[in-house]
Length: 600
Image (cartoon, rainbow, N blue to C red; front, top):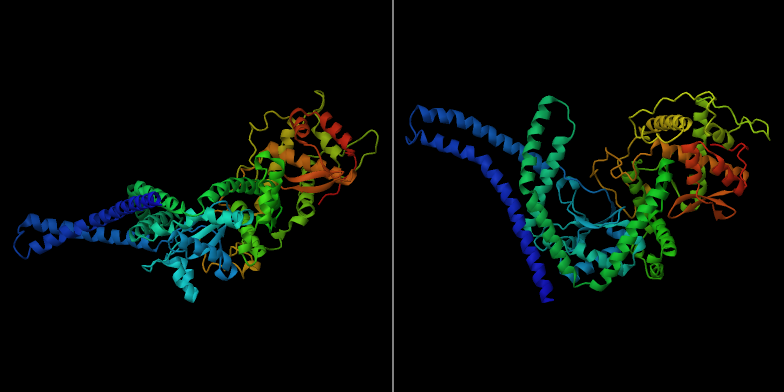
């Protein structure tokens, strides 16, 4: 314990010394700003008193006095922008104390054990991370502690300064047990101790103000005069940031080291086990977003229980992966989400925020942006996605004037069939009429970005079809992109447990903030559409059904079993124009490609 206390004190002392170094940069800037004014005062006072007579000193007074006034005005303008600029705030789902009294009680008990002030509030983020965030700027509204009467002192340091907000990753609440969550949060909560020191708090406010001033100066503005003034403010803020960047980084490292040392006295052994769950939760959350949630978001639907889904995904991972064996046995213990009064409503709010951050969806549900439950996912997302892609594929074939398939054993059908796609992509004989190349997709827009290198190893017909598909999808996404953004970041159903922010605390003009995947290439887009057409044919002619795999996303179930991977057969058709492997796969599954399929 004495060693831990010594390490904590050393880390806090190092953080304070770095904070003083940051504040010294601020003092030096202030001294540089008032230096011309001090010289002008000396010259103005020296003239009437007879100490600085003569033409030279008069000329110096006439030159230095206006310069000092200009420097003071510029410094005042920079200081005003730094003081009033709104620092960036992470998009979160705020959790009121009435919505999670047990969670607040656990955090306050943890703060008491660590002998640090408790966080002023708790918020959730749809990510696998936790941190403390200062929201004491006037633009962020009054601190939540002022709204709870007798509990107001719990969110304040003994010197009266408000403590930061504790931001918790929402997947942790659903996957971790109560003891594991407490162990993981211990180093984070311990950071409120050094954060409450006046020098550290002032240094952080100064750095965050400079960063906010740079953002204000970089924002697009109208008017050349206003733009020139903000350019000067931005230059000054960047110079100051460069001067204190190293000290600020070392200060944060020292604060983290001091918090880690202090947290060793609480649940240290359990924290080692809990850190394994952090890595596992991150892997499952990333897989759930990219493989399961992203297809639904692209269809205008957002899964409303993402955090509950990560439990199913990690349980499935535990069943498949030997390295994760034994983790599922923890599920018999009390989950941390039981600390919430209404975990379903909070999960819905966090799920909608995740869709907004990672995909750029609207802030509130609407006719074209509705929630979907996991039980309805196969029918409302997987089936609709495959049939929508198949309809787009046949629409492009109509644009290319591709004739319906002519099977020797069956009459020509005017309906959309898989044979039409196979016959068109089959590499024709050299004597056959060449296919006219299609116009490439436009380079702008959020849709797929086909490249010549990506289509270099494909047949001419595959390249033409892929380019047309890219152009068609780009037009569809461009037509659907102008959606009105609502001011709220949480659904109305979560209004009771998660209080809405009074003002927009983060800039949502550049959504998605964290795109999950790069735009699909033309080759990937064509493969997805052919796969969707195969799945539609399987559902309509072989009795297959759509399914959901928690780790792989949409899957095709034939006879209750997951169908084998289609990728090698589809790629052979795209790259070589050879449908033999795919037709053999269809025959083994009992799929009839000549039969028309139902489209959206």
